[in-house]
Image (cartoon, rainbow over all chains, first blue to last red; front, side, top):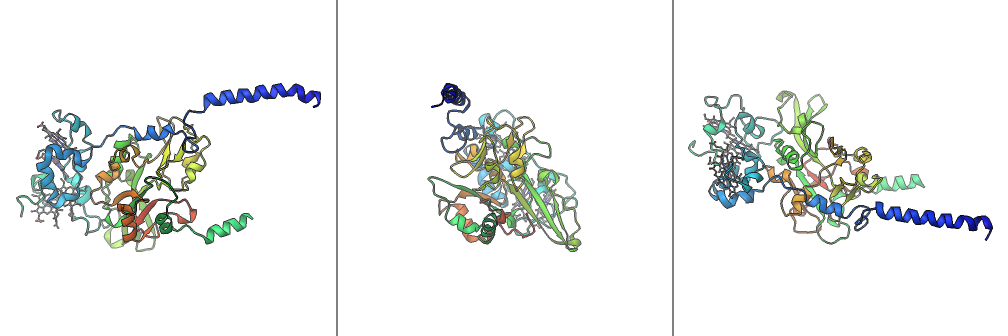
Length: 151
Length: 236
């Protein structure tokens, strides 16, 4: 082997060794476990905190309302639609921490006339003219049983 | 050579249903999404629930999912609007007499099987999980925003506080606990569903069999797994 190569060889070995050491510390442990990414990222993503409850959570304590709802026109609606995320309430039901959304704008999100809304899916009214004698929709329509007392 | 490859990829276009029928090998679930345009009433609660569930900044530029209203006018023009991503609901902005057809289109990550966004990441901070969900590793992301540019569906953004790429995770933290993603939990009409393409009895597979579905931008061969029912050709 020519002398100049012999002299360079240790340098190369040191260089490659250093590279391997630095790489060892820079690359996270689980990198490459499943593919070209950090395996633990799957756990990170899966372990984020929940914010929304699920409608099954409400059944435990509000089965009466759930039953009403499920046998009426709003059957397809989750409780969370009008009551917000609700997880805080499930954890601590006595601390007034749940929303109760109603009113012309809110109900109008779904029920306001719009040509893009299929009439097969949703009955629509003009929230500006529909029974304006009372302001809030829930003064006439029980949100859990929309025709209660009206028919 | 390159010409031949381009030509063959043009001749052999991406076939949505064949792909769904025979997903790539793998154990366990392989998630896909279905959105039924005929059921969507444009309440925008999905977009709102998504922001709350995933702590997406409230400013109107950052969305993991949003809703667009397409209006095809009688003069042959198409109007697309999405006021604040649909989060505050929609008001019909065009008079009835001028409308030929109008409908809502909810948009979200397509969780592509050959996702362009994960391919361009220089550090391996975004990837397709073994169960078919495109995810971001926010501890590893350097915020270069290549992936934001690469996504043909506009589904990514740079989180203004974390300075990392952010996107729909199909609520990975919920589906792993057996719950529905927030947008699907809240949807009042069941317009959005998700399911396992490997499970031939899943809701999604049934939905694919019962409906005539299509994906967005099939010519890009992204392997998108968001299947729309009743979606007009005008939507891209």
